[in-house]
Length: 413
Ligand code: SPD
Image 1: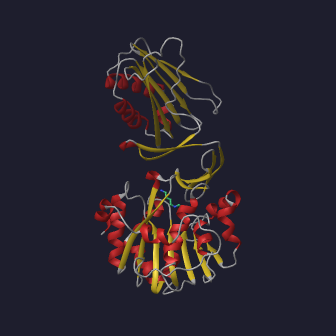
Image 2: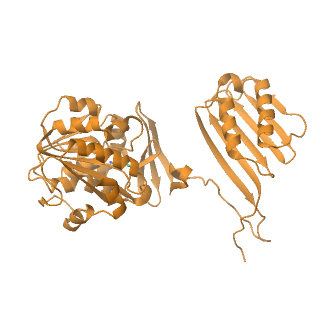
Image 3: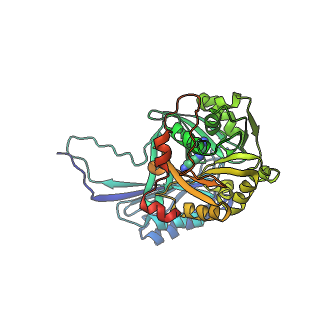
């Protein structure tokens, strides 16, 4: 009977080092020094001389290749002059410390980015069986939101439809067998056709169904158009300003996500490709509702989670205005949530937190801050008719989504 055997007999580390120090990778002496020091550090014995050869003059292929036999197998390396990338493989049937090898390689070649893949070789398969273990399966997209803690989200991909680098971020569009088309920003899943409704309905409808009148709305971020589509389902909404710094997101959404980007055809929508911070500077007491539909708080989005920004939002809202912002997973981001909630409470008199279920986000759950100058989402429920069918939001959800488990209450209240 085939089973799982955890006995291991060999370790292969493939270390990819991107944009290394050009002088180091072009020096035969330095590569030799690297091999000697590496072997000493991880306790493997060199067997014979190091072979280091240059692959020719043509810059496209030129660069050193290196092979060093060791008593327990071999180490090889390829150093590409055209890209300044290095690709190192260390295979040994004697165990060694992979972290030490990776850290030393980074320190020696000074790359901008590093990826390491580790393959653990195990016992031979049961006689007559061919066993194939995919350690890093191809065509899977991994959102590594905590690899160090043993967490990752994997989604199988059919093909990459687009990858664009804007001045602000890297945007990817993929087709997937399970979730339809999918958008990433800097490797973070933003939305899929399968479950975007659960996010976009919930970032929009609860606030509109609390404040008696919502005519003017500002969306910061949200360049895919999903939140705008939801807000525009209400006839009472007369104007939606959408301020997304990155025109590329809008362009790609229009091309690949027609059901999201239909909002851009609505005459009530005005688009501003500006920095949300600066945009707010010139707005006072204007909006009934401000929504921040941002990516996670890394890079320039980080400021959207801080008190200085919340003060500007407060100032741009009418006296009875409401602010809703994307506020992460109560399971995986308690620190971000508690810091932002604290800052929101310093600015707004009423603060609640609610959530929705989105299977393609880490932990399958994502929350929102509901900060308000006057109305409470719990006691001022004021239902309104939205045009078109809603797939997630209804009266029961409105009442239930603000009810939090004990551990989340401790983070928020
Ligand atoms: N962890 C990812 C959170 C992404 C939130 N924003 C998504 C944008 C969809 N309009």
